[in-house]
Image 1: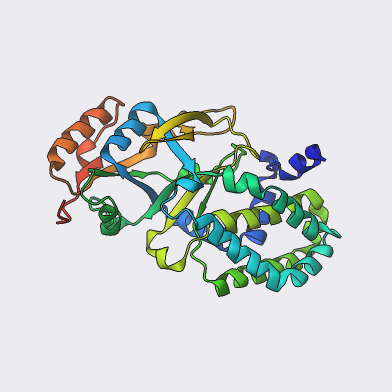
Image 2: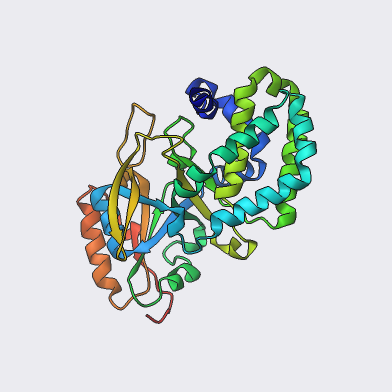
Length: 331
């Protein structure tokens, strides 16, 4: 049974990329549209962090993913699960009926499978958070994000090229835009999934039970991990997610770190190209598009230090790539 579960959860092969995209559009319609819009528009992503952590990322070539329990709002995962549970309760009969036309019993099987993995999802999900970066924020950053750091630390924004987020090979990591669903919008999402299943019934039947299970499992997982209250919509957040108990990854390494006095397990994304798993464009010199020094007492000191650090990577045109925000925020 364990092997069957793992087989059902496996990511599809590189040769099935077109099918992967189609399955995603059926079972994760909102996330798929947002990904396509961001990719077509060439939008960049940005990671707001402390100046010290920005230097550590560049020097060590590692991005930390922390447990969802370490998020500012530790109930986020429960919020997403509550929305999913309420939406499924309202739409389960319609969903199961549509799925039975593709593979009899696959709906209940997937729900049971998802519920059996809930402990691993709750305790074993690690994330790194970023935001969409708009062109008008170049050199300035976003005021709300700078305010989030208060006056205790010097903030830095690492603006990155988003291409690695769209890698279709299985690297054991997932990336998706956050959905800011109300309860009605969550139900609308499930209704759209049902309509998509009906429209693509023949294709899903041919794809087989394991593929349908994978698509529906991904739908449940995405709504659970990548859903926030609509009040946070201005963040335009994206999440890189890792569930090592379900999908181990050669793109990460694990360690125990002490953060604010609390020992905890951390998974670190290795910022090194790995041809074996199809991961490219993730070294700091290729990934970083620009660095914005946040409002602080000593922005020029930070600027000079960051330029020197990036020069050591062989990066050029740093006068354009490193800028100090002139937002008049008191620190």
